[in-house]
Length: 225
Image 1: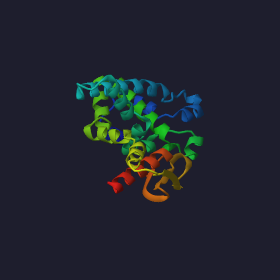
Image 2 (image 1 turned 45 degrees about the vertical axis):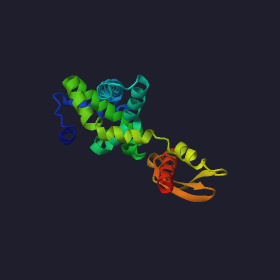
Image 3 (image 1 turned 180 degrees about the horizontal axis):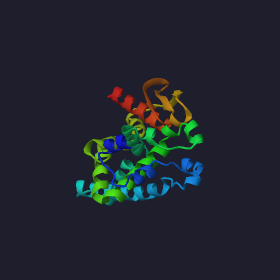
Image 4 (image 1 turned 90 degrees about the vertical axis):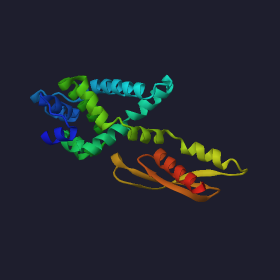
């Protein structure tokens, strides 16, 4: 736990809170006799703490932005994929306590489990050190100009933009195809190509077919430009 605390740059006064944040429900269910709590309640609280801190950050950072824009940016910043990336940077998977089934099934790399654990850790810090401590951790992990730029990039719809670009000329047909997929079911990487009138003009990869197609469309736009 001390190693994880160093990564978080936070020392717990009550280490039991961090331990609970790392207890997946599968582990708690297998150790009922020990009366362990899973991290689900902390995840619930952490979701609200994260939402508030992110809303506060965006409200101050974008004083002229309308409510709709702030809502969309917040949703992208705190989405499952963003939290999963935080977990990866912290190496959080190695500290989780999982039941045997989840362990065998690749739970330490499962996007949803890791994202939920991040929210639980945020809640644990909040309960241990208050809102200032939680705010500082969330800012370190998630909220900065670079992260917002990454999120804004994700929000761009390259498939629509590419469609609009090629339709400037008549009789242009765009199609997408999956050319490969790699990795286990819980952590697949998909590879897609986009074809203009049957000719490949871009390729890309992603953790979902949609992401792969968006990446291919982006590559095609860069090539056409």
